[in-house]
Image (cartoon, rainbow, N blue to C red; front, side, top):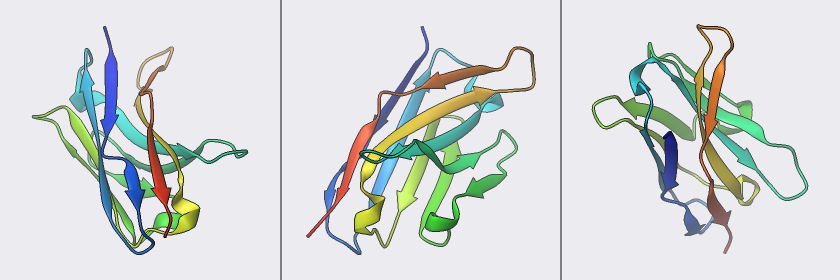
Amino acid sequence: QVQLVESGGGLVQPGGSLRLSCAASGISFSIYTMGWYRQAPGKQRELVASITSGYSTNYADSVKGRFTISRDNDKNTVYLQMNSLKPEDTAVYYCKAARTTNWPPIYYWGQGTQVTVSS
């Protein structure tokens, strides 16, 4: 059974930091592209950051320079370090595992963790 379990969300003041974690089980973690997505109320889910099996990273323009994605294949975990948080970063953050080298592609999602940036 595949599980992606996010943790680390919470309430933080503007300018603060949080680190999200996503622990994966039931998959060959090292071969998956891992991503963080977020969905704010009334908005579509959007990509925040992703990291490939080869450690290439990609970031949304809105978080470049503030967020850092990383992975630890020994722990089957992907992280999102979020610094200089803004109220507009408030959303539910989801972890996604993607394997697109085969057909059909395979995707798994976590249950999400709430991040609220407010004074």
